[in-house]
Image 1 (tube, chains in turn purple, cyan):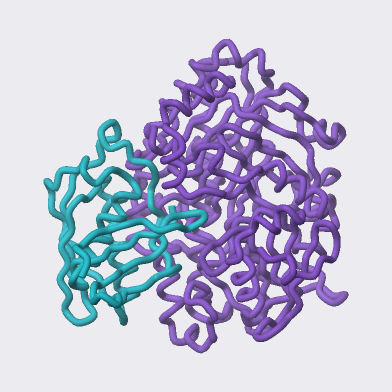
Image 2 (cartoon, chains in turn brown, blue; image 1 turned 180 degrees about the vertical axis):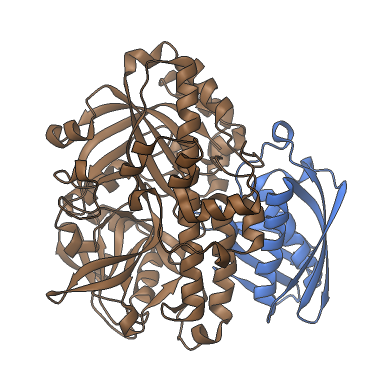
Length: 476
Length: 140
């Protein structure tokens, strides 16, 4: 991105003043280096978002922002329904409620190292991963609707997961306002055999070692110490979410109430929040959030089974589960007052600070855990929300590394088998049904997640707590 | 005019699929192959089983996105991969035939699921040489 087009406000904050059809400024976070490397399309897309009706305060781009569909990936925007505010299917994304959850295990790396191959096999055998994989749970229409209404709470009721997990999931594991009746039969059919599956692409299940602690007091409350082993899961709402995203993208473009909105880009298709299509989408999207929460809860249950086979002393406790593709209704401070806003986070993680009412009671002092996934060869991070992020980004932070190289380029540069062997020499065990898939996900195809996380920390979007490095990675 | 063919084009996070052919039908069919090639080697597939799809949209571009989404849907729900496509237009409706086989993970090494067709770089047009081009970015 051409830095001359931006006004630098601090070493990690940049501004695009309102011009043309922009209703609010755009604020971008990141170091000069990250901003220089950022695609020009991010500039174009964040400017377009700033022109949408009912947008409040500013359109924000996180330090890992990259070229998306309509919204940049790493984009945050909040809309006021009382001022014509909109909801956008593209502003949430196809993989609705894609997110990360991290569990502590009560183990240290020495406990795992001697049995790591066996643990990798057990996880790979127990958690279905990859294209065409099916889950072991098959939902009939009544159970499908119960799952879409109940989320992770439904999963726990059915014996997948533990009741105490729910305290550590956004929305207490159950997104209110879900409308299974707003979800098409096509979407339900696509999901029927996919519960408890990991998916493919950048989704993963990873056994990680804590290699560095940046804030020991918060880490202590999170229950993590250096050399501890944790388990992280990255996946979303599977076929159901993808189908809902696909269907509403078209419906929002064609619906009469949506056609009155002047769009700078077809991909920004949106509808007034207070319109039939807007309300239907919100009901379907919330059902997809529940699908993602149920899916990650089932995968957690399966992971506990796999750990029990290999390391019976492991005790997997959920630290937190946070989504990074959502639209949520939240109260935010605007012009000295409080407003109820519809906050879109597309490839951005909610990052509420200490004392926020939506943060679990046990974490009120620390702020919400912010879970940032890396690649199978680099690092992931645990951060914590800070009070200042409310004013800076509606309480949002980055979500990951973001690709720097296309899948095609990656397969020309790396071969799956060589990569698996090379990572093994570094002490990282990979299990995947597809060697081509491994090559496409090569660590070198991604940007440096550490630079992104450092920028989020410096910009005051969230603070670094711990660095994690992979020991075992199951890829779809 | 170029022979019919398919290709991928660059998108930072995902991948663009493009079909080119002397007719609009062939451009759509070639784009089907480009979509399959995101997931597996097209040459590894046997065109054994036939699945029929129908789509309807108010213009060529939305019809193209619907066509790719219909293939994505059939791949996902039937656990199949398709290596041959046939398209027929009837006004703003499309009737498509997909030939393929069930996913064989060991043989096909499927790299990634396609979540859906996006409207990014979505175009259906005739190039200067008269060839039809149908393309968009797909989310993976």
